[in-house]
Length: 111
Image 1: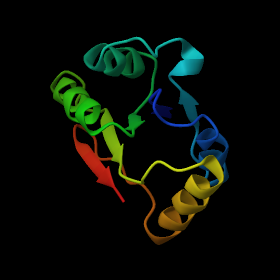
Image 2 (image 1 turned 30 degrees about the vertical axis):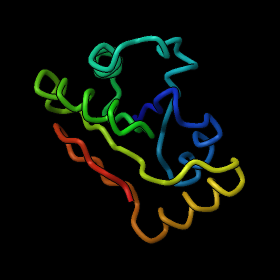
Image 3 (image 1 turned 60 degrees about the vertical axis):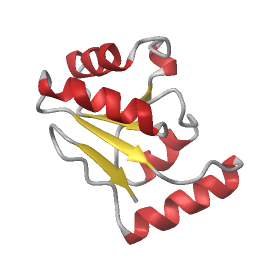
Image 4 (image 1 turned 45 degrees about the horizontal axis):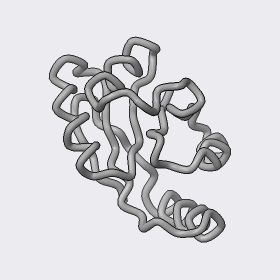
């Protein structure tokens, strides 16, 4: 189960479901105010295996918490911010080329 950081559009949840990925948004769990390490801890404790973020600094900071949660992964999504329709089309196209493959205990950049 994947968690979307507060900086990713919640519409992405439906797109990930199309790809067969179960995901939830940090904002829908009330976790948007948690610090990076606390968010990783809360997510891991709740059974999530991966956090997707659009914020590189957040991704690097959250990745440091992976030492405590070696089964958890952080993915930094490098797609440029755009209006939702264009972002969705770009995300879908990149996924078809190369799906996200989280790596336990690591920060991965995608695409």
